[in-house]
Image (cartoon, rainbow, N blue to C red; front, side):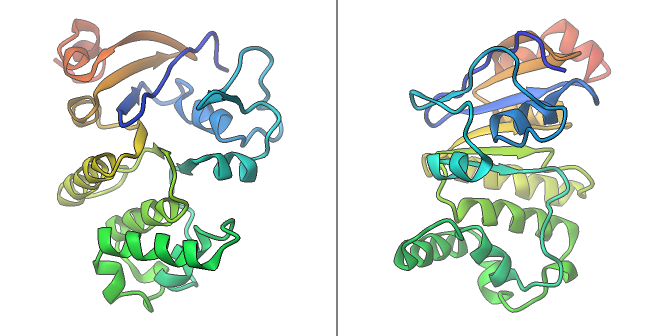
Length: 223
């Protein structure tokens, strides 16, 4: 459950959302992207994006507004090739030329997939699969990219690669809402951050400042 959660992501910002398991981070991202089937329903409040109220829109409509969501667990199609997975990211684009241009932009950002475009996604390493999941979302050319635990299960070297990619994505003008278990790295990268506990925002502020907050250091950094 989420209670009186209020947060915002500005143009060109990286905003980190951190908290313990079960705090409601994934629930919040699902609410923002319209994945509200079953029990997940907004009873109060509003979700607004670029001045538009998103309540009542389905996930496909929200994607076309410029919001892309990379869920925890990647959710690739392992039996399809790298290229086929990337192309699925642009399936809502009616104009083939735009879809091709978006795909080329992602391949420029992630050149390893240009070389491996015919490789089955299921044969990639865990880190490569995470990069592919992010790349698939970027084919949508979003204004806001929401990432749910992109570093989970990855070796430290690949965690660094993922965080470096997030910085490059922001440099291209895409705003990022980052849910991340690696609190120190997430807040160090973020312009601003929020701490979610039991469905409520309990702290917010500049990312670098939250890293030094006594509560964050005690509860999430073990200091």
